[in-house]
Image (cartoon, rainbow, N blue to C red; front, side, top):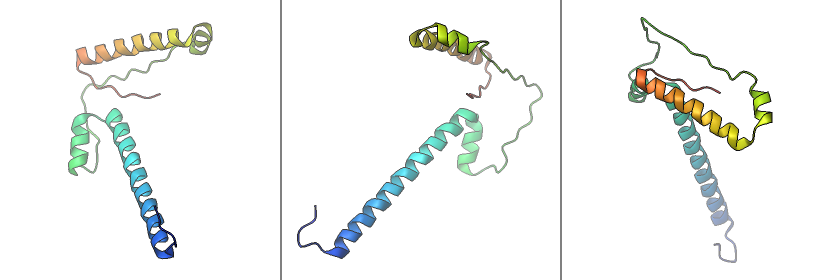
Length: 113
């Protein structure tokens, strides 16, 4: 709310304040999104080290590593043949099974699309 007659300096100050608030809010949203992405990609112990500033390199060595790449063969054809609800249910069942296996075997899962 601005009283009449307008004070140009006051209006300008209010606009600048609102722009700074908007920029701060956008920066916080971006930081949150970045944090969520890193949390999905990196193991918790690495995230803890990064947050504490303890490591400038996150490479680790592991004696035994297995990488599983999965693909749904003919997904486009399958998706065209079923309803959206059925596709979502199928994908949910598949990802739930993968999640249970990773928890059961104590492995780290990196999610990509």
